[in-house]
Length: 325
Image (cartoon, rainbow, N blue to C red; front, side, top):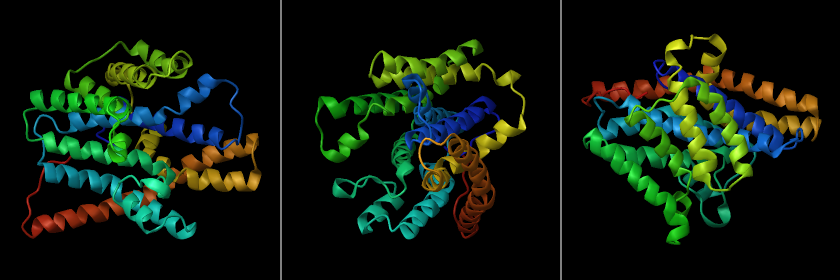
C-alpha cells in the first residue's frame, strides 16, 4: 500500500483508484447513502483486493534484478508501513479506549487478535496483517534465484489459500489461509512473467469486479481474475500515461488515505446522520483531503525519521542495502 517507484506509473495510479474505492465503499457501508445496485457495492469493496495485487506486483519488480538482503527488505517494508499504522492504532487506542493489552500488542505487531478480542484496534488494519505476512514469506525466498523463488512462493500461497476449507487447520492458520492470498499471487505472476494485456481491457477488469460477484461467490473468479486483468492491462498503458498531478498526489497519499479515512467518516456520520447525501460527499472529500494532509505532515516526517535511524545504524557499522520500492 505504501507508494512505489514512479517508473510504475500505471500501478501508482491504480493505488489512487484502490484508495478511493475503499473510502467510497465505507461511506456506503456506514449508510451515509444507500447503494442502488449490488454491483456498485461489489465493485467498491474490492479496492483491498486491488491493493493486494499491487503489492504482489511491486514486490517482484522492486527487488529485480538484484534483490536486497532479507533483513534489509523487511526493514524497508516496516519503515514504509509501520510508523503511520502504529500512530493511527495508538490514536484509536488512546482516544476511544479501544483495545485491551493483548489486542493492542498484537495490532502493533501486525498479528491477528484471535478469540474474544476480535480484529485489530484500527479496523482497516486487518489488511496489514496479510501484507506483513506476505512480506515475511517474500523475504524468506529472496536469496533463491528469481526463476525458482517466485513460482515456489506462488505455489505455497495457492496451497495456503486452499487450506482453510480443505484441511480445517487451527484458527491462526485458517485466518491466514484465505483465498485472498491469490490476489498477491496474481500480481507476482504478472510481474514475473511480464504479462501484458491490451489497454482497452482495463475498463473490462473493473467491470468484472462488479458483475462477477452477481454470478458466483468464488473469490478467484470474482476478485483475483479481475485484479489480474486490471494489472496486466494497466501496464500496457505506461508509455502513454502522463505525470498528472492529482492521480500522482492521490497515489502518493493512498496509504495515508486508507489508514485515516475512518477518522473522517465516523465523525461525519455522528454529526450528519445516515442517508445524508451531503454528508456522503463531505465524508469522501474530507477523507481524501485529510489523507493528503496526513501523508504530507505525518507519514513523510515519520518515514524520514525511520530512514535516519537506519542510516545511523549503517554509519555505526551496518551494511547499506538496495532500496525497495
